[in-house]
Amino acid sequence: MAINGEVKLTVSPTLHPANITSIDGYDAAKGYVADAVTTLDSAHQSVAHVIEARQKVNLDQSRTDRAKVLMTAQLADKYSEKLQKQFESSWGRLDKAIQHTEQELSQPLQQQAGAGTVNGEIRAHAKALSRDERVKLLTVAIESGDITTAGAILGAPPYLSGLSDIEHKHFTRQYHEATNPEMAQRLKVMQATREKLQRAHPALLQELEKAVGASRRDVERLQAATNEAEAALVMKDFNPAEH
Image (cartoon, rainbow, N blue to C red; front, side):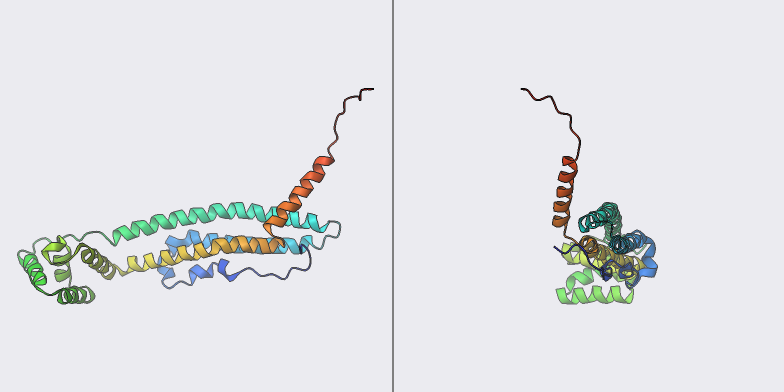
């Protein structure tokens, strides 16, 4: 077990906040992922501090290698406990924001008022088409911004236009994304941010262990030996021996 020696470590890039701030579309969505950026930044700086602390502790020749490891591990544990709460909080907020945005992008369309018989005619036309032709009609309408056609078909029960429920939900989502690109982009940024946090969490635990310079099992073994030694040094009261 190597528990001492010169420390030549750098913090894993996985923990750098640039993993989030460099996501395409971040600037328009940064208010929704700011907490996650702060969490990664805290993780990055915390590991860097543990590495720095270990370097300084190793210069103290008055302490044993065992003591140096345990001191550094105690610091790492404090950071780990604090960061665990930060990660959980960031995940929770992101999950809620993502679910809310998903719901917004899946809301059923409301038919335009005052469209008269046009809506019915559009749906009848769509229903008379083959499936491929109907899909093409809707796709072109959404991509070209033809709200009249897309709204007439998607703003009514799917069977009126010959759509399946799955097709109706699919094109409704496409319609919302096309008509609200900022929300769609924001969702992508939040989803990508959540993925970055999911990758960073196990990396954080690994980085803290590397910064300490000993595995968790070794630290626990050293702490157990220290506890046993300290317990043996506690003064006891003895009853007189019987003769």
